[in-house]
Image (cartoon, rainbow, N blue to C red; front, side, top):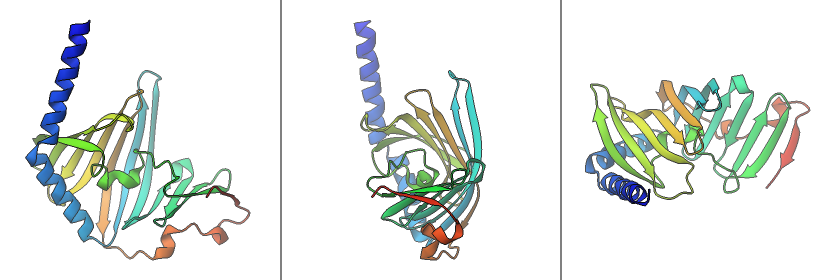
Length: 212
């Protein structure tokens, strides 16, 4: 058993070293970053799946995201969930409860499966390894550099034409797996700063929980 454990450790270390030194993956992701930063804003619709096979859980939702720099507006209509971030504060609105909680960006949990992070998920805390390419996409695996990241591996697909991430599959360490797939994407759409702040006047009677 001890030998098997040591072999597993060395195998994993080898994968990490390979991922860290993979020049093709690095070049592709640098181009993705350059492309993403070249747009003033990004708007997309997406499918969002959470699955836990051991627990027999399969949840599928659709959503919309609007991003402008560090600001984003995220809506998951089937869950009655809306999230607004203006780069410093985060508003999380639950329609069924007519309740909004406010946190600072640093205090916000910022879960990795948050679809707003899809286009930049690889930028911090990961090593990466090129897997394959087809006529339309590149496939790259991301490996966490520390145990603080809740995923054992993330596989992303990069659209060759747009040079943007179109899909991410996140394998959770506790059996929860997430998939985010972009269906429709537009760039440089008009986006006023007010779009990234929760508007209390549009939600009569809303309960505000300020956790800042």
